[in-house]
Amino acid sequence: MEQGLTPARQAAVVAAFETVAIVVFALALGIASFNTRGTNTGASPVAEVVIYLLFAAGMGLIARGLWRRNRLARTPMVLAQVFGLISAWLFWEGDGVAVFAGVVIAVVCVLGIVLTVRPATGADLEE
Image (cartoon, rainbow, N blue to C red; front, side, top):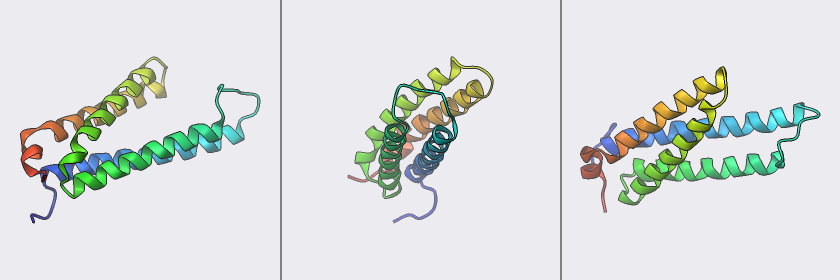
C-alpha cells in the first residue's frame, strides 16, 4: 500500500480540515449564543451546535474513508462540498467578514470537489 499523500489522501486532508473548521464554528456559535443577551435566532442554540457537530462527525467519517482509500467515501464527499457551496452562497449575501468567509468556504469546497472527482483519485480508491 502506497504511503504519503496519495490523491485520495489529498481529498481526505481537505475533508479533515473542513471537519476541524465545522467543530470550531459550532463551538464559537455555542459560546456566542450564551454570551449574547436579547437576540433570538429562532432556533435553540444547543440544537444548532448539535446539528453542526453531527455534520462534523459525518465529515470526519468521510475523511477517514478517503484516507483509507475507500471508494464509498467519494460520493458523500462531493455531496458535502455541494452543501458547502450552498453555505458559501448564503455567506456571500452578508457583508464584511461574512463575504470573506463565503469566499474561503467556496474555494475550499471547489478544491474538495476537484480533488475528489479527478481521475487520479478514482484510480487510487479501492473497492
